[in-house]
Length: 149
Image: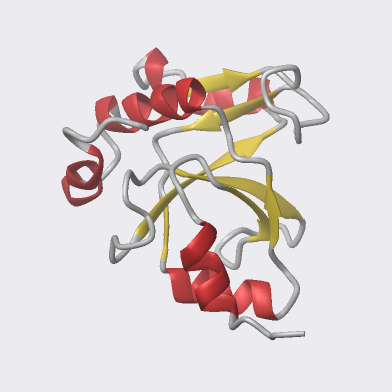
């Protein structure tokens, strides 16, 4: 059997709406979270823009109550196959990653690849990021004028 390097595996399979399940080093929690790729060209972009889902819907709504309503996107468990509970995504927070960082997590068996998210949901997430006053313009520039295929 051929052993494909993790970076090659990630780069060959990643696309808009790819979902990865892993523990995030910058979070206080060590549990895995779902992260959704928003880039239109993730295999070639220098940085991946990820958003994270949470099952703590009311807590996220309270925390972001002063932000535009489009910046928080609720996703019912019936809308995404790998969610077992209704979830919410705070589009005011971007988690930038490189393919190398994801490959490292894959190599250490921390990262699981999940079902690709439907383009209509990803587009809502992208629009939420674009209207957020908290997301850096350099991150928004990666998403501007690029439609989800």
